[in-house]
Every structure is written in structure tokens, then in C-alpha cells.
Image (cartoon, rainbow, N blue to C red; front, side, top):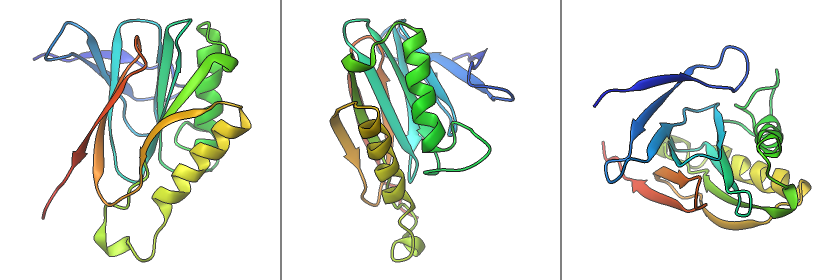
Length: 175
């Protein structure tokens, strides 16, 4: 299978994004790396892998536009989609530019696990990321209609921009 490279619209110096086709249809599938976000009104599935990171999926069913971010930390500088306090407002702004109305947006939140056994008693990074997502969405008045967060296992996430549907598969890596 060949990969097409598409330059992301996620700010200066953003890494390229990788496009493939869904194995079950001709739907385009985009892999979202940590610190990236993508918004589209096209027939696209956005996919990513999450551990302690969090992905917020937003969808406007009337405008049929949606997007997803993948952030690593609750806050930070310089402004970047790597941080929830920048990634969520940026996702909202990009959706508005594509015709979404904030009053119609619905959110789904995924990730926030503690996948490293050595850090389970010491680190709450995943929980802090989940809380940052919930706080950012609440501040914007966007209801969370679904989530799969926390725990000790990673997740593969697929978000369908046309339908607002999201699927996860738990990743159980045994070493």
C-alpha cells in the first residue's frame, strides 16, 4: 500500500500527515500524530494511537463537519496543539471556519491511560489530560456525549468525520 503525504494546516513547522485508504472501503484515512489536529467536511476517517495523550473529537451533524486533535499535555508554551489549552480552542476555530456552529457541536473524548507500570503510583498525566479536555469543552459550552478514558491500556481510535462515529480498539502490549 502506498502512502500519500499531505502537509497539515496545523501551523508552522507541522510534520506531514500520512493518508491511506480504509481496508473496508475507499474512504480516505488520515493518521494523526501527537500534537496534530485535523478538520474536514470530506469523507475521511481520522485515526490515532493513544496512551496518556488525549484525543477530542468534535462533530457538527447539521454542517457534517468534524475534527480531532491529539494532545500530549494539559498546558504549555509556546502555543501549540501539543497542549490541551491550545489544541481545543484551535480545533474549535478550525471547525468554525469550515461552517460548524459551536451550539451544534458534540464531543467525544478518548485516551488518558497510564500505560507504563512503573508510573502508575506516581503519575496522573493521563487523568490530568482528561480533566483538561473536559474543562476546555465545558468552558466552550460543548457537551461530551461519549468517552473512553483512563485505565492502564492504550487505544487505537478511528473517527468518521461524515457520521461523527468513533471506534476504539484496546491495545494490550505485554512485554
